[in-house]
Image 1 (spheres, rainbow, N blue to C red):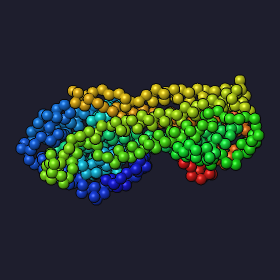
Image 2 (spheres, rainbow, N blue to C red; image 1 turned 45 degrees about the vertical axis):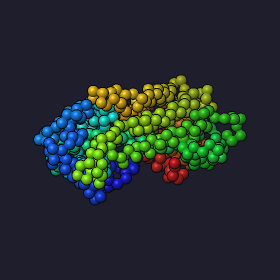
Image 3 (cartoon, rainbow, N blue to C red; image 1 turned 180 degrees about the vertical axis):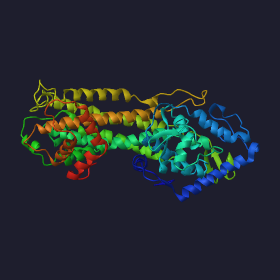
Length: 517
């Protein structure tokens, strides 16, 4: 994959999760070198140069403090060291790799004034498997994700810690084992490496990729539940979708029609007296679809962010306006502020949580004997002697409740920092971390629904479900056997969650019914 050209969230995921190799495109290398020449021109002027933020001044509330020419390199090193104050658990290698991709992409866009040597080292961290140790907490998401990005930059200068071949070690050792050498930061480079939204964007982008897949999984789980509960597919009629044309709603309804075609179970109750199913069944297009639309909007926002310049000051070549230096202009602004990303990720968390919210209600329909005509209480083989899936519903309810707490928006909060200079912050890093946890909870909730609904389908034998539901049922049964007597269900839930995580469930269903939305 070539950095410096437009990237998609799928591209980012490919590098972070699947190790796709990375290189810098030729035009990006030229842009980066040209912007660096503008910084070098300022540095070459020494103490005679005008004050330019972050090059020969202090940072934040110390922006008016002039730094002597002979201290400029020490200034950048000290910046990285002082800002590396993250706390909490370490990020996983996947999230760290995503951050590195995004940090390199910003520089490759050619407005950061960073040497190509630094850009090359970032790329080699990815290609040779060196992952800086980055604690997950410590950013308020405004003057960039300062603390997490400072930990990334520490590894570039041979300080801090990094993982290589699965082992945590001093960064200098990890670099040496990978055949790399640390770099000494020049003017502006420390600032460019830690200013930006690459932490929140990396975590958020990966979570959004998962959320988009979970929308399809929710449709599959809902279809299996509908068959087990002998529900109707009429609410998914295309004519209903046309008169309320939300794209997500239409996409979910299309999936449900594809999943439910040709069902013996459904045909068996075509003339039953039931008029309408519960909302959790017949309103799947409206609820799942609203989530789809919200996730799609958030993905658009993050795709723009992936391809944005978010450090400060920003170098513009070929201009001679105020602040011009050597045919370039450096403009101090606020592109590092994470509010666009924070708002999008807060919405995404709320939207994703609804998939678990409605899924838990379908599980209740399945296990509650007052609601599940023809199914045993709690789907137990011998109700009373066996508890069946009684506590599976409780576990799902617990996850749904936790999500409601996590969905409180972080972006509505702000605590001023840097002696009031940074007086409004986005808290976007918290938005990203919350979204990632919500996604994990949703995956587990859908896993619970899948194993519960599969048991319901088993109890409808000898009637056969639709081809799509049969494919989903078979995929589940390959990893979770039918419940013949009570057993610990935590292993079953974990196995179903892994079936979702790895994409095997969607692949199995699409093999039977064709591509789903």
